[in-house]
Amino acid sequence: MIYIVGIGPGDKKYLTLNAIEIVENSDIVVGSSRALKLFDIEENKKYILTKNLVRELKNIVRSNKDKNIAILSTGDPCFSGLLKTVLKYNIAKKEDISVISGISSVQIAASRLKISWEDYHILTLHGKEENRKILLNLIKNNEKVIFLPNNLKEDVKYLIDNGISPNKKIIVCENLTYKNERIIYDELKNIINIDFSYLCVCVVK
Ligand SMILES: C[S@@+](CC[C@H](N)C(=O)[O-])C[C@H]1O[C@@H](n2cnc3c(N)ncnc32)[C@H](O)[C@@H]1O
View 1 (spheres, rainbow, N blue to C red):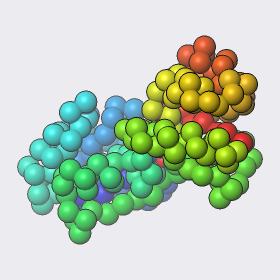
View 2 (cartoon, rainbow, N blue to C red; view 1 turned 180 degrees about the vertical axis):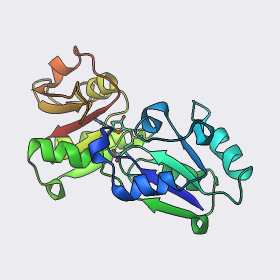
View 3 (cartoon, rainbow, N blue to C red; view 1 turned 90 degrees about the vertical axis):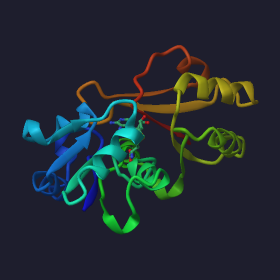
């Protein structure tokens, strides 16, 4: 069986007991070094993914057919996560997969800001160029949005270049649950001048 395991936003405290149990009982555990660090795993079971993620996952799954494999996915695997990658690239069939929910970065952002996320449009710009236009139209229509940027500076520049006021306010929730967590509420024009890590959730009210 292949388990796609949501690991939450990054701090151990946000791992589910189910995720810990599945990982403990798996023969092979695959993930980024950031994800693998969250668990106590024997060295010979670990596989660190690099940039050739699809090829590596295919090889691991094909050469370990009768084993239990845990694939670690940031946040929740069903939102902009590894579930889509595994299905899209035929890494494994649906019937051979079990998905273990994790706490999404979107949920943590909502809890930090004390907002109800059902009131927001939620979208990811990760590898989804077409969603930029959707985001633009939502903001033009004064809709509330929570989004995962692809490249925050470029995404914000795109919004300004396409008619959103540089004075429009945005909230950037960076490195959620980590020691260097930062939440910044500022105008688009100022956000462009701040350096952020790739771990950001953005909110426009
Ligand atoms: C490939 S997506 C995975 C999203 C994930 N499945 C989820 O449910 O949060 C990776 C992006 O999620 C967001 N993200 C994940 N962990 C985060 C964290 N601890 N703080 C802020 N953003 C985070 C960032 O936008 C990051 O670039």
